[in-house]
Image (tube, rainbow, N blue to C red; front, side):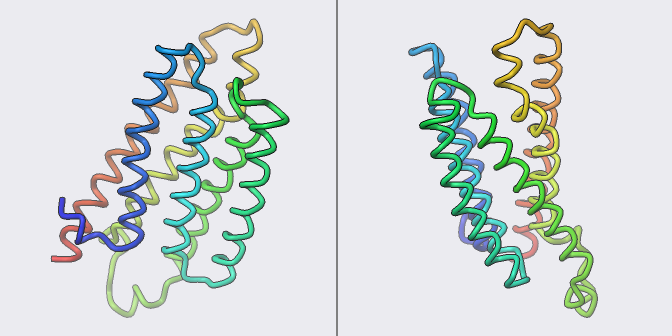
Length: 198
Protein backbone atom coordinates (compact mmCIF):
# COMPACT_ATOMS: atom_id res chain seq x y z
CA UNK A 1 0.00 0.00 0.00
CA UNK A 2 1.46 3.32 -1.12
CA UNK A 3 0.75 6.02 1.48
CA UNK A 4 0.71 8.68 -1.26
CA UNK A 5 -2.44 7.27 -2.88
CA UNK A 6 -4.45 8.05 0.25
CA UNK A 7 -6.36 11.31 0.52
CA UNK A 8 -6.79 13.16 3.83
CA UNK A 9 -9.59 10.91 5.03
CA UNK A 10 -7.66 7.79 4.03
CA UNK A 11 -4.60 9.01 5.92
CA UNK A 12 -6.74 9.57 9.00
CA UNK A 13 -7.85 5.93 8.76
CA UNK A 14 -4.21 4.87 8.34
CA UNK A 15 -3.30 6.77 11.53
CA UNK A 16 -6.29 5.17 13.24
CA UNK A 17 -4.98 1.70 12.34
CA UNK A 18 -1.54 2.60 13.71
CA UNK A 19 -3.10 3.91 16.92
CA UNK A 20 -5.11 0.68 17.23
CA UNK A 21 -1.89 -1.33 17.04
CA UNK A 22 -0.25 0.88 19.70
CA UNK A 23 -3.46 0.64 21.75
CA UNK A 24 -3.54 -3.16 21.71
CA UNK A 25 0.18 -3.68 22.27
CA UNK A 26 0.53 -0.94 24.87
CA UNK A 27 -2.51 -2.07 26.86
CA UNK A 28 -1.23 -5.64 27.04
CA UNK A 29 2.30 -4.55 27.99
CA UNK A 30 1.20 -2.09 30.69
CA UNK A 31 -1.25 -4.59 32.18
CA UNK A 32 1.57 -7.15 32.35
CA UNK A 33 4.07 -4.72 33.92
CA UNK A 34 1.91 -2.59 36.22
CA UNK A 35 -1.34 -4.55 36.56
CA UNK A 36 -3.43 -1.48 35.70
CA UNK A 37 -3.61 0.02 32.23
CA UNK A 38 -6.83 2.04 32.56
CA UNK A 39 -5.11 5.43 32.29
CA UNK A 40 -3.55 4.34 28.99
CA UNK A 41 -6.89 2.91 27.85
CA UNK A 42 -8.69 6.21 28.47
CA UNK A 43 -5.94 8.20 26.74
CA UNK A 44 -5.91 5.96 23.66
CA UNK A 45 -9.71 5.98 23.38
CA UNK A 46 -9.60 9.77 23.33
CA UNK A 47 -6.75 9.83 20.78
CA UNK A 48 -8.75 7.52 18.51
CA UNK A 49 -11.81 9.71 18.98
CA UNK A 50 -9.71 12.71 17.92
CA UNK A 51 -8.32 10.90 14.85
CA UNK A 52 -11.79 9.75 13.74
CA UNK A 53 -13.23 13.22 14.33
CA UNK A 54 -10.62 14.50 11.86
CA UNK A 55 -11.65 11.72 9.45
CA UNK A 56 -15.32 12.74 9.62
CA UNK A 57 -14.39 16.40 9.31
CA UNK A 58 -12.79 15.58 5.97
CA UNK A 59 -15.64 13.40 4.65
CA UNK A 60 -18.56 15.59 5.71
CA UNK A 61 -19.71 17.98 2.97
CA UNK A 62 -22.22 19.95 5.01
CA UNK A 63 -20.45 22.95 6.59
CA UNK A 64 -22.91 23.08 9.50
CA UNK A 65 -22.07 19.48 10.41
CA UNK A 66 -18.38 20.37 10.33
CA UNK A 67 -18.90 23.27 12.74
CA UNK A 68 -21.00 21.14 15.08
CA UNK A 69 -18.33 18.44 14.95
CA UNK A 70 -15.67 20.90 16.15
CA UNK A 71 -17.91 22.13 18.98
CA UNK A 72 -18.60 18.53 20.03
CA UNK A 73 -14.86 17.82 19.97
CA UNK A 74 -14.22 20.70 22.37
CA UNK A 75 -17.01 19.70 24.75
CA UNK A 76 -16.07 16.03 24.68
CA UNK A 77 -12.43 16.88 25.39
CA UNK A 78 -13.45 18.86 28.48
CA UNK A 79 -15.69 16.02 29.68
CA UNK A 80 -13.02 13.35 29.03
CA UNK A 81 -10.51 15.31 31.14
CA UNK A 82 -13.10 15.78 33.90
CA UNK A 83 -13.94 12.07 33.88
CA UNK A 84 -10.26 11.10 33.93
CA UNK A 85 -9.30 13.49 36.75
CA UNK A 86 -12.41 13.79 38.94
CA UNK A 87 -15.27 11.40 38.13
CA UNK A 88 -13.98 7.87 37.53
CA UNK A 89 -10.26 8.52 37.78
CA UNK A 90 -7.16 7.23 35.97
CA UNK A 91 -7.26 3.78 37.61
CA UNK A 92 -10.81 2.94 36.49
CA UNK A 93 -12.34 2.33 33.08
CA UNK A 94 -13.71 5.75 32.06
CA UNK A 95 -17.17 4.51 31.00
CA UNK A 96 -18.77 7.97 30.93
CA UNK A 97 -16.29 9.59 28.55
CA UNK A 98 -15.66 6.52 26.39
CA UNK A 99 -19.41 5.89 25.99
CA UNK A 100 -19.98 9.48 24.88
CA UNK A 101 -17.08 9.28 22.43
CA UNK A 102 -18.52 6.03 21.06
CA UNK A 103 -21.99 7.50 20.76
CA UNK A 104 -20.79 10.52 18.79
CA UNK A 105 -18.74 8.35 16.43
CA UNK A 106 -21.85 6.26 15.80
CA UNK A 107 -23.84 9.41 15.04
CA UNK A 108 -21.11 10.67 12.69
CA UNK A 109 -21.21 7.35 10.81
CA UNK A 110 -24.99 7.61 10.39
CA UNK A 111 -24.69 11.24 9.23
CA UNK A 112 -22.09 10.25 6.64
CA UNK A 113 -24.32 7.46 5.30
CA UNK A 114 -27.18 9.99 5.15
CA UNK A 115 -25.01 12.43 3.19
CA UNK A 116 -24.02 9.68 0.74
CA UNK A 117 -27.67 8.84 0.09
CA UNK A 118 -28.42 12.48 -0.71
CA UNK A 119 -25.27 13.21 -2.73
CA UNK A 120 -26.46 14.30 -6.19
CA UNK A 121 -22.88 14.64 -7.46
CA UNK A 122 -22.41 10.89 -7.19
CA UNK A 123 -25.59 10.31 -9.18
CA UNK A 124 -24.53 12.77 -11.89
CA UNK A 125 -21.11 11.14 -12.20
CA UNK A 126 -22.63 7.62 -12.07
CA UNK A 127 -20.45 6.68 -9.09
CA UNK A 128 -21.72 3.84 -6.92
CA UNK A 129 -21.11 4.29 -3.20
CA UNK A 130 -19.50 0.86 -2.94
CA UNK A 131 -16.69 2.18 -5.14
CA UNK A 132 -15.83 4.88 -2.60
CA UNK A 133 -13.07 4.04 -0.08
CA UNK A 134 -14.74 6.25 2.53
CA UNK A 135 -17.91 4.17 2.32
CA UNK A 136 -15.97 1.07 3.35
CA UNK A 137 -14.00 2.89 6.06
CA UNK A 138 -17.23 4.24 7.50
CA UNK A 139 -18.95 0.84 7.32
CA UNK A 140 -16.14 -0.69 9.35
CA UNK A 141 -16.23 2.11 11.92
CA UNK A 142 -20.01 1.87 12.20
CA UNK A 143 -20.00 -1.89 12.83
CA UNK A 144 -17.19 -1.68 15.37
CA UNK A 145 -18.71 1.18 17.36
CA UNK A 146 -22.11 -0.52 17.35
CA UNK A 147 -20.51 -3.65 18.80
CA UNK A 148 -18.37 -1.68 21.26
CA UNK A 149 -21.04 0.68 22.59
CA UNK A 150 -22.55 -1.71 25.17
CA UNK A 151 -19.08 -2.67 26.39
CA UNK A 152 -18.01 0.94 26.86
CA UNK A 153 -21.29 1.71 28.62
CA UNK A 154 -21.24 -1.22 31.04
CA UNK A 155 -17.62 -2.35 31.46
CA UNK A 156 -16.85 -0.28 34.57
CA UNK A 157 -20.07 -1.52 36.17
CA UNK A 158 -19.31 -5.15 35.31
CA UNK A 159 -15.78 -4.84 36.71
CA UNK A 160 -17.01 -3.81 40.14
CA UNK A 161 -19.98 -6.15 40.63
CA UNK A 162 -20.48 -9.85 41.27
CA UNK A 163 -22.37 -10.41 38.03
CA UNK A 164 -21.80 -13.62 36.13
CA UNK A 165 -18.55 -13.15 34.16
CA UNK A 166 -20.20 -14.77 31.15
CA UNK A 167 -22.04 -11.47 30.55
CA UNK A 168 -18.75 -9.60 30.43
CA UNK A 169 -17.17 -12.28 28.22
CA UNK A 170 -20.15 -12.21 25.83
CA UNK A 171 -19.90 -8.41 25.55
CA UNK A 172 -16.17 -8.65 24.88
CA UNK A 173 -16.78 -11.33 22.24
CA UNK A 174 -19.24 -9.11 20.37
CA UNK A 175 -16.66 -6.30 20.44
CA UNK A 176 -13.92 -8.58 19.10
CA UNK A 177 -16.16 -9.76 16.26
CA UNK A 178 -16.99 -6.13 15.45
CA UNK A 179 -13.28 -5.29 15.51
CA UNK A 180 -12.50 -8.11 13.07
CA UNK A 181 -15.27 -6.93 10.73
CA UNK A 182 -13.93 -3.38 10.98
CA UNK A 183 -10.43 -4.45 9.90
CA UNK A 184 -11.82 -6.41 6.93
CA UNK A 185 -13.98 -3.50 5.74
CA UNK A 186 -11.17 -0.96 6.16
CA UNK A 187 -8.88 -3.27 4.18
CA UNK A 188 -11.48 -3.35 1.38
CA UNK A 189 -11.56 0.46 1.54
CA UNK A 190 -7.78 0.61 1.17
CA UNK A 191 -7.98 -1.66 -1.88
CA UNK A 192 -10.69 0.62 -3.32
CA UNK A 193 -8.45 3.63 -2.67
CA UNK A 194 -5.67 1.97 -4.68
CA UNK A 195 -8.06 1.41 -7.62
CA UNK A 196 -9.67 4.84 -7.21
CA UNK A 197 -6.33 6.64 -7.53
CA UNK A 198 -4.82 4.48 -10.27
